[in-house]
Length: 315
Image 1 (cartoon, one colour):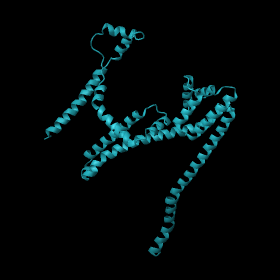
Image 2 (cartoon, rainbow, N blue to C red):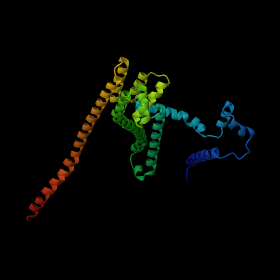
Image 3 (tube, one colour):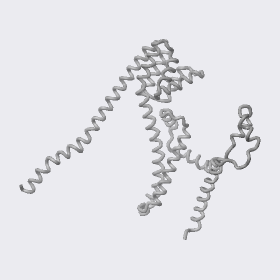
Image 4 (cartoon, one colour):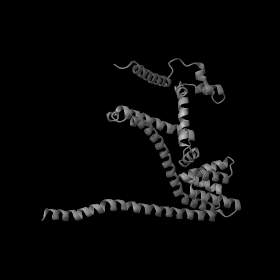
């Protein structure tokens, strides 16, 4: 017989799930009553009436606020604990900028907490559902859910780092081409702002999107040097930072930008070649691993084993 407390707990859980599901279904169903006059007039006066906009905004019932009120304190405490555990909010903000994400740090922490809770739930299910886990010591059973929760949070952070590194590598690979395009535009007589606008409109790369953001900042009144320095600070790419420093120095001193950009494009291409040679050297060493530890021992075994077999058999 199922214990009374367990049956009550399951009843509360199933009732809550059923209530939220019925509430969600009722919120998306059309109204069965006849529409009133205000319902028919409000959509036509949205441009001139703030009350009509406020009235039409409340057109369905959302159970989300109720759930938020219920679980917000617990969720907030968990977010604070996760932020204290991981720390380095500035590094997380930089990685979000490098990955091209518009999320805030607290939004990323919330998703990281969701990953941790999912890992914890998986750990609980594994402990109670897998028969082999029941025979393990109690300490190991208790450690499994927190370990999976920590693994989920670290996995989300690792995904962010991978996305940031991938996007930075793409930006650095696009840098020589973009600089050469800017050099051609400046040589044709355009200004630096028009050149960046042309590059951002003609290209669809990651660096071009960043330049498009700088152009928008300049159009709203931010100085060009400030926008470029902010771009350098957000991305934290060494070749791009060096190039932006040279460009801002040339703008301050009145030096010819064409020669500066041409030299920076050549430096960026040389840097790309150097990185390519480093990667090739690492891959060459990695290719020796199966040769030394797999193919060569197997060759020695096939070369020596027949002779040993002949000596043992006496043929």
